[in-house]
Image (cartoon, rainbow, N blue to C red):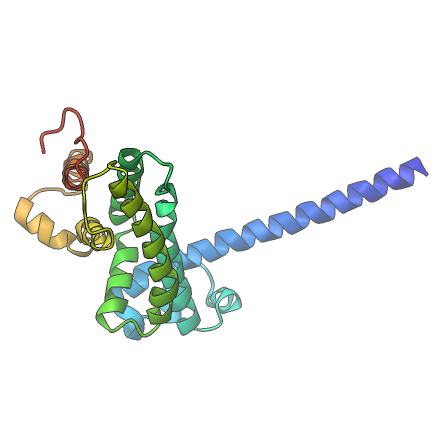
Length: 229
């Protein structure tokens, strides 16, 4: 009897492990496809991109692409969903009981990292908005609006408590998005003006420190120590 129970538990464990493995494989495959699609949509736009191009960029057979995402429109929507999620999740640090300086600095660092490490994500999203947001319009009016209102109320509480200087709590986010995303959307312009590698560790540090100091000072908070900006 004991042997049977042990064997039964072992079999159940194997099934569970198999399910976990399949789930993990699916996650990895979907992530690879979304990353590939992000790059292709950024270069070609929705109209110019093809599923064949995306499959090649993602390094997967085209039938696999259709297995995970039925058509190009579905994949495009998934790419935009992921971008918005990855942009908004770092705002989780902005809470009423958080230290304002630490929270704002953390959010800026995350946004700048995304601009440098995934510039195509910003370009895909910007292109969607420039075309009137036909796909994500509803999401902007629901998830994005809800998040901004929630985080703006935190800033207003900080202002009321004298923890940061008075700022427009909603336009604060518009300004911050524009400032950080310009390093992705207009990277070629920045390179043209600076005439140098804008992605070197030194160049990235310079840009990050500048954006952090401008943002912190606008909130009446101390700037970074030992910073030239």
